[in-house]
Length: 181
Image 1 (spheres, rainbow, N blue to C red):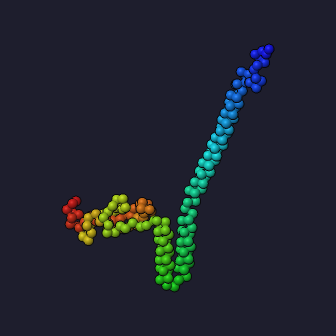
Image 2: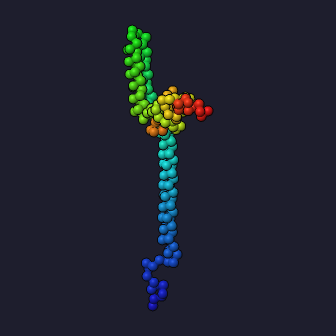
């Protein structure tokens, strides 16, 4: 006669062994969490390094942002030095005037290449966003509020005023100006 213990198949696992697969799943989950934490820390470190590198690159870019403009200005400086030497050796004034004109045109081209353009002022209606009134004068030729003379040229860069034109503005005919006072 067989006993109940003998009737039990041998490949059945005891009750305590049921928790072993749970432990291995727990261990797998813990390993996965540790790997993800490690990966996360590496990504954070990589992000910080990238941010620091970008800040350094930005600082360098800002520091040397005007290098191209400076090179263009140095060419103009060379032209001025040649003109100055030519002026000291020249017999006629016209050659010096031509040299100055060439330097001036070259300078305007450099400014234009950098999107820096002069502000038209003379004959325009006074605009405080573009002009700085230095004087006001009576004029029978110009209507009141019209720019009649430019003392210092103004400039815009990409449409934004970087220096307003300093101007003389008409107060209208002298008779009108006297009547208003």
